[in-house]
Length: 268
Ligand SMILES: [Zn+2]
Ligand SMILES: [Zn+2]
Image 1 (cartoon, rainbow, N blue to C red):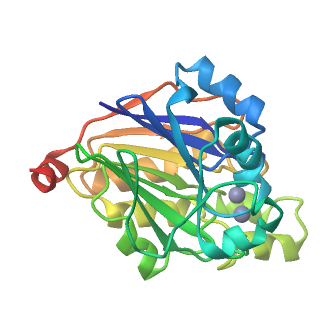
Image 2 (image 1 turned 60 degrees about the horizontal axis):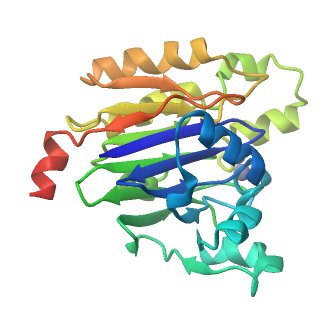
Image 3 (image 1 turned 120 degrees about the vertical axis):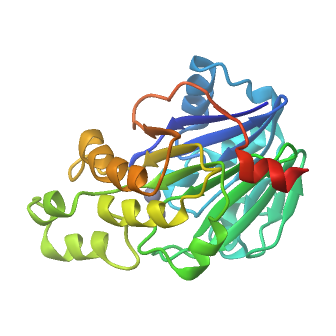
């Protein structure tokens, strides 16, 4: 059985985990190590099965607790080389598994693939993690815009955790100065609800069972707005799965991933 745990998401921290038969891979560690432990315990995720921590990029809301947690648990960090370079103070103290772009890296029961994204970080990536039974999770935050490479990486997924950062109107009428608004909406910034809806409609296929909207702006979005924009677009595309909205301050209950028809066919 494969389970997805979304421990929290937003501009103050992002962390989720994939658990397969007791092995756990964290994807981003944007809370303190102690807070990640507290949230994991609250939803029944046993971190003593941790095999690694994969990072999308080095920004604090994605990497804050990574070094301490990796040191405490003696597991490697999986990052793009540019991200590892930016985390240079950790070199020599922590184990590192490089994630070459679009190549498969195997760690325990997980196969991890990274694809480049547009964002103002050293070498930001979206990640896809597959398990032996055929479940495939995509995690894509901090997408200024979804490039062809991102769309290619995120095809044929069982579940996706994807940024729905802001509502365009709320951003335009927010108290952010114009230069900040432009940065957020720009090609190195964050994906709007509308852009997330369009991307998800394009990525939809019969095996897509779980969608989690994540990294919502506290000032320029609400869970109702994100869901209200994405849900109709997904339904029009034929989505019959479960749609969740991640919260900043509390984890979601465990989500079981059952490979759909497309994934089962691939796994046989
Ligand atoms: Zn970032
Ligand atoms: Zn972020």
